Amino acid sequence: MELSLVDRWLCGAEVALRTLSGGSRAERATPSPLQADAAACGLSAGEKRLSGALMRVNHVGEVCAQALYQAQALATANPDLKAQMAHAAREEVDHLAWTEERLAQLGDRPSMLNPIWYGGAFLIGLAAGRLGDRVSLGFVVETERQVERHLESHLERLPAADLASRAIVAQMRIDESEHAVAAQQAGGAELPAPVRGAMRLAAKVMTATAHHV
View (tube, rainbow, N blue to C red):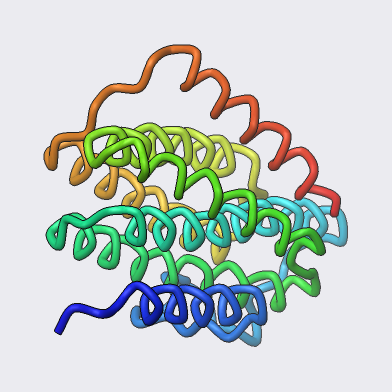
């Protein structure tokens, strides 16, 4: 049964509260080669700080992903696109839970600015969705491509001994690549170069800030 607009907004509000409160639960097991109680063993204090900062940035990305997918699903009347966005969002919930769990294992915390990141990403996703399904899908393609490159850089920066974080980031990169391919195959339009550049700039501001706050 198709939900009413009010019901969809209420569901969206529930997702937002769950995302920001730390109540998300992964459907898939955490892709870690280590037991949770030993996940931070073997790392120096400096390595733990670096891994914590990088995983906080990744957690912020997943907070934003929930907002983007929820907003874009609300903005479209296409049931197939809604289903595609919902599927991607479920996988992003896994990422959200994995990164949050890893932060706790490292003795670190999520970004204190997560409500701001969520609200801003929701407005961006809603705007992209209002421009039509092809633009909305194209926004997904470009976002996921940028996230994939961002995760590749984290694999280069994470301490070699932090196998747990590296396993999580590697699986996230695979999932994000699949989301980009799916959106492109569904008819995503290539965004203009200035738009792609603005997205990269916004991402740099977010990641630089979340690294510390």
